[in-house]
Length: 432
Image 1: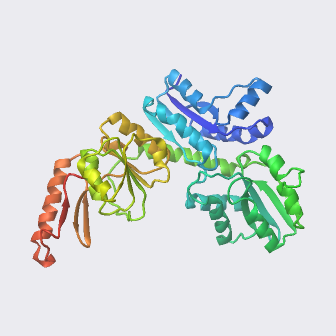
Image 2: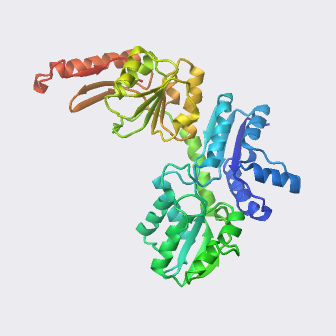
């Protein structure tokens, strides 16, 4: 048994034929892209897994079950690629299953779903408009998605904005559940009055939602509601997973996840406006306290989670500079966070939280392990309007400390700057 595995995790479907054309096709493309890895399938839907077990005698792993099997078989290097479109509830099930088992693998890479960012939306629109290029005005292409109340950005609205910006105002997407619903589609149809609407699922699999909610015979199906607006409807019962161009995006996500794990080298000195960023610090001891103090000079939305805190951290909390929560970290603390710093007294706990941040694509700094850091905490010297940050890749702390002091002395002694020692703020001991 190989020590490297590829796990493709889907929601699942009870429609065997469309499963083979979508989920099966995505799995095939991924296994061909990573031939050195043993392949495993898992589905997040317990209802569908139970249905297949009872109806067909087919047993499919849940995310928890497949991870247990991998550990039993000695897999050390794990690549997980979800086939979900959004980082919603089903994707969170994967992260929840992985979180307690993360440290038992030597390496874990988790590919992103298809849509998480504005850039993803633009990429998706480029692919979709190419696939449906034959739909010309006054006809319309309408896509029915599922929706989620767990995504961070209004991705469906972004896609509609991108359609219009790219010269496809006759393309529109809505959702069968959650926002934005079908209303954007109906508004566009009433405004444009198309002769014909090509109706297609914005779903990986053309399963129950596509067959019933989209193309079904009930009065509230999308097909009948659009027909009631006076347009002819052509239902395309073809899941997104059937298109090679869409499947290629999953392969790209998986490759990017592995490449991110390999990336090493110097850290680029990027200066970031933290004014409106939501920052989480896990830990409130000596190291964390120094970093919180420095951050508080640049950021106004800092949450600190720790069962105990130093007097300095307690003082900042009492002053309203930070929000302090006296308890242990829980994964939900990562919700809506833009940046995370981990500095507890346990290397194991730091690594676990750091890995969880990486699976959620949240930039993280782990004080006990520079190799796990997406960014380093520099030594900082401030002389308004100048800000100097110094790092040595997390290796030479003494050298950073000395260089920071040398820079402070240079600024203070440079007569052309007219800088007094009081004007030059040196933040000792906060680096990396």
